[in-house]
Length: 423
Image (tube, rainbow, N blue to C red; front, side):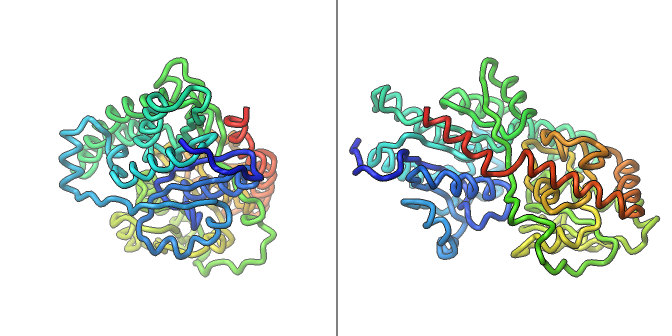
């Protein structure tokens, strides 16, 4: 392994991501970009990432300002038939196979042989196979004193997400699509338990994004001690004081944002549109539900046929939709981690109604920063209460903004990551 020429920055970091961290338009990319942005001041960072299309690199100028080197591979394509076969025939979970690439593995090996890194950071279970590759290389080829610190940033306790998806679909298994979803999640849950545990055991440090996820990973690997570094929010980018023209939505406006082919978001949008919104429209006939986010699943697009439902698809900036929201809704019933969408809404000073799961791990309290409801009746009732009471909306919004200022600024969170390899 060659030793590069000295640089002014004290650390060298190799970062592995399954999605290019720019533009930061959804959970994983927002987290990766902000980690890069705040580590770049003290680390020479080489980024090795997948891209959906090579053209993505043309719009990634901000990444070049943060990284010394960027190397990429195109995301492999797998047919539905291939996924179906591996679901039943492969011991590996779908998330371990989704980004399987001999070229990417070669790029990882090339980087390891050409640079002396202080740390290798893998973001998300999708790059778990490459963390295992680095772990094997360290054991076989690197003296103990020269081994880079290996860090796994587990964006969700993935096995738990699949377990919850299975349990959610199982309750409606009388529907053929739900029955198929339950079977898929059951298989993936069992496989992910083994794979996620293996990745956690192979690295030096595991990062969880919430206390709930930390406990879930400890149940998976007894004796594991994950470090909690939650998601944060850019308090300047998301601010109620910004002079932004709000999106043109019917009033009152209810807004939900996220990547709309992500299974928990799909379930949330369907549940709210079918079970909650009609109860709200019985009191407020003009109420509009805006589902804002890229890549809407066909089941989500179909919701636009319902009265009062708008499916926007990709928008270049979600802040005008936050600004337009009378109430921001988080109807999540599946998932884990901490919700960047919720933190963004709180930073914008919005009144929020959420399920308990939707705000799990954030530390918010019902009636103080948000209102919580887990049944259609309770969720609709809280939303109606807020729509009737502008003063209560403003009070919740002020409390929410103060809460994220105190607990979720990226500038205070990311230095914890540097401590893992600076010791």
